[in-house]
Image (cartoon, rainbow, N blue to C red; front, side, top):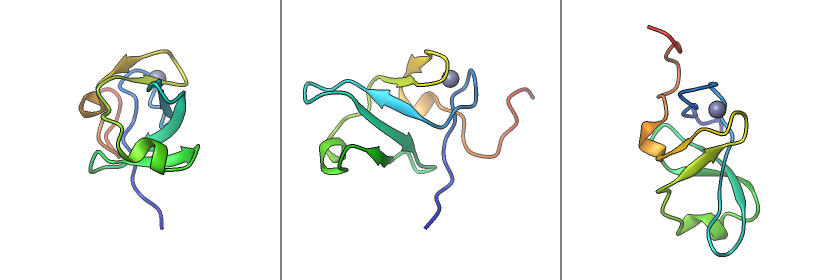
Length: 76
Ligand SMILES: [Zn+2]
């Protein structure tokens, strides 16, 4: 099953990480705003409130709802 992924507003990357107390987790963000596991096990991020996430590609950080929706050009 392939999900459309939201993208970094700065570099269009689709991989993000967060640093909850349980440790750094890596994930992507689906179109509906839910996290898609990359690693570690999904249980660790299922309850994670994505208040601040970091782009693995450029260092951008912000909230998941600030990400670009899938399929939109970077510059309009
Ligand atoms: Zn980025």
